[in-house]
Length: 181
Image (cartoon, rainbow, N blue to C red; front, side):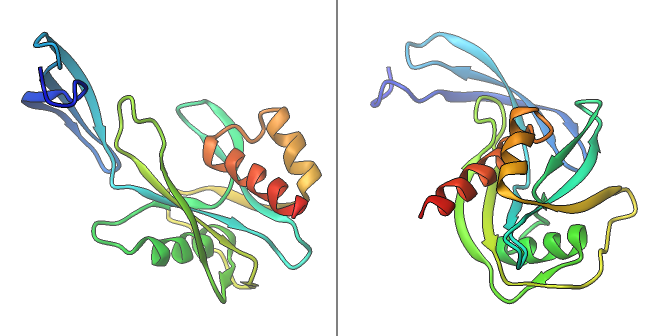
């Protein structure tokens, strides 16, 4: 048994798929009790997301179709990190690309793993309320609409699952806590 009684040791790794966004591996591991198991692991470059609030106090959301869900949902502006990219610079880039807004300042809130049971994706979450109007610069394979919603509308959107992803639900909760002071 290992010294902490929890850590699994990698025996071997097999690359299954390498895509533009994810890299899938099948790992054979030795469990703390000596037994063997298989782990499916998705490697991800990491991502950023932005809680962006306009001068009227409304939360910016982007409406887009998500193929794995086969539905349209609302999310806070977000995107994946490029190799070696600084997360704060990526947050500024994604905010401008998806909403058309730049900002005077960006504040780091927290970083969190999205699905640690099978992926190493780490999202860095930022906040800004110093928006400067500009123009969207969507990627050629990106189709989305940006809109602003007050907190009451955003809470209702979570309850109706129009906002259904964790980072965006976290953003709404963050805004609720901030409103309470």
